[in-house]
Length: 533
Figure (cartoon, one colour):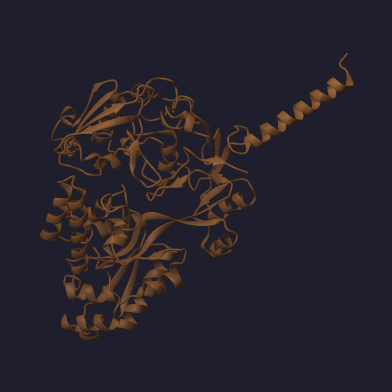
């Protein structure tokens, strides 16, 4: 029989061990390392070649990894590729894959998986909406347009761990692109066996990222577990993640406040002040802009002076304070903040300054110079927007500003989103609302919008296009950045658009959630996140 002293000693020892284990669990212990994130929508697809929206991309970032991964400053760092070589002309990349990169089923991730995934996304029969993101590859667009075969595309697995990539022209931000979901590898055997359903079933949803999906109740909750086969598993502190799904902002906020979730995005605007006072609200940069675009080929906005007058005759601070709210920043330029110039180390937006000017008096003068004093002689003008309370409120405010500052009566027209997008794309408008979110962390993701002659503004300026071609044909970042600054100025000299506000990412997070970061692309990376209570 155990003596009283031995029993007491055993109990004390057990208590000490329990206390120590509990203390460790607050930072690294697997029993406490569970992150609960309230996801804003059921993913429509977790196939990286098919997905297009933020909720899907957010989930995919946790379960997949490309050749590169973006760090906390949105710069590409080695992912599946441990290193790469770039030719002096910037046209050829040789990626060296990690020998310990594995799929969640334990099989190796190979260069062939990347070649297969990229050509699959480009296949015209597959009809991926992300195909254009791969067009920097040599012959990628030609293949997507059925002009050449897949063999002509500039991606080739040299061996299991070596991927050779050839580009159409130097693309300084190509490494950033390799971190985008359209460039993720997919397991060829699994996808080929079940091309339509592999990404919707937990049993066949094989990834290569820090986590794997352990359970998925569609429209209910997604559960994740740490992937022990991930090459950098030692850096992953969370043991599990539980993501309840709700498209209601109020419901997601209630989940956090009732301790059913630790984080959520986009809390209701009416709650922002209270959440800020409680230290729960954070406003993170989000690489996007809300703007009005002129149809530069439709009267009266085919006249640059008329465009300049209308662009000057608004007040962004009033709009944001009284209508938009939500911690948005007034936009006085096109390229949103959050992009670092790798040469200067400064934010591209901060470095380039503002281009948009607000001046009601000058606006009236320009309208007179254009032949329309106090708006007399102008044809009927209509603001087109897609149905939404926010879009309507902004349009009404701008309508009033143009009446007060220019003496012009403007009509409003709203359309269901699908009809609206078709009308805008086909140039059936005079001035319309629009928004743009960057696809990759480089100013070109904004400036390229107005280079294509089929852009929504029907804008074509050879000088602007030439500057962008210069920026796209060199890897010299000093030259690239300066030509992009020069190109952005031209957009405002020509008054192609009216930037209104830069989008932001308001989110609520419990203070004990540590080690994660938000990309300016709107994604939270939980690879190194942990719970510290």
